[in-house]
Amino acid sequence: MNYTDILNHVREIIQSEGQSGLKNVCETLKSSVRYYNWVGIYYMNDVTQILEIGPYSGAETEHTRIPYGKGICGQVAVSGETFTVQDVSEQDNYIACSIETKSEIVVPIHKGEKLVAQLDIDSHYASPFTSEDEDFLNAVCAEIAMVL
Ligand code: SME
Image 1 (cartoon, rainbow, N blue to C red):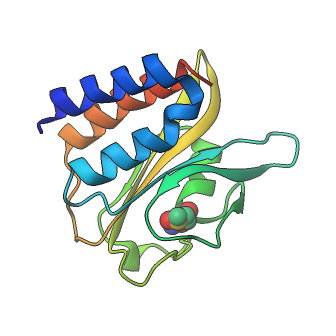
Image 2 (image 1 turned 90 degrees about the horizontal axis):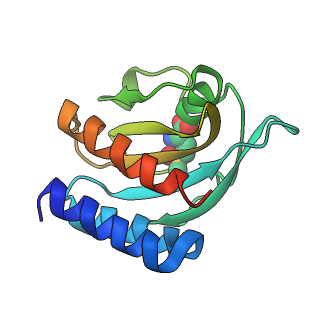
């Protein structure tokens, strides 16, 4: 499947299943792109300043709660901007979920102006993410935002 087809499939899932379809969205992304090996959503909790795990597809993770500022996800909680890490070994502020992970991209999910969640993708491949991935994932996040 190309990105347009995957995005259309994501739209169909969200339109028919709403928020309860988000695990299916994660599974669809993981199974559609060879180098998306863990795909999950973290929700912002501005009261506790901790990210809380939502639906995900891939190996079970013990990082179900991530303080703002910690790791790649925690940095995106503070910056509100996409963070692409082509080589996680070069990142000091990084929380390892799996020794297989070589790279990671975290895309903010905004509802209007407000940062409400993040889409986190881990890859077993080095330097796999392109600007096409960033555009595609921004479009996916805009769809996800509609049901949050
Ligand atoms: N690596 C992330 C932690 C979440 S796991 O990848 C699922 C980080 O540094 O924020």
